[in-house]
Length: 172
Image 1 (cartoon, rainbow, N blue to C red):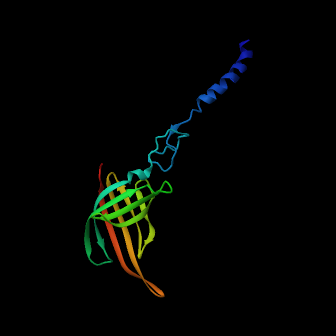
Image 2: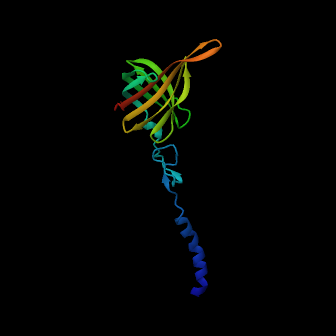
């Protein structure tokens, strides 16, 4: 009798064994988040977007130079990074000001867990590009600003400025 029941018992227990092994792994399923779990099959609403670590106000100092000439101290610069106008999970906006005078508002792109790039963009006669990274509250960034002038029919690079900024994120 047991020999006849064994195949039926095995057949009835098999689905229970299979479904027990298929419990979903809960975790962050957003690949753009700091706490992304590639093994997660079910999102648990704990995702922390990578770009949020960059968002904030920074007190910065730095240096600027034009080519191989004089290196100039560039200090007391405020930098603010927001994600208010972001179109994708990588986009951010950086505003640089000096004593409450806005200097630039540049588009940034998150390129890695700790890095970003200043996408090549033209504002007026200036073209900007560069990159940076963050380590805890410390931000480091280098970018180039090229001023072009146009004298028909030619366009000339009039002035190239290399700027390196180092800043500490303000805690609110």
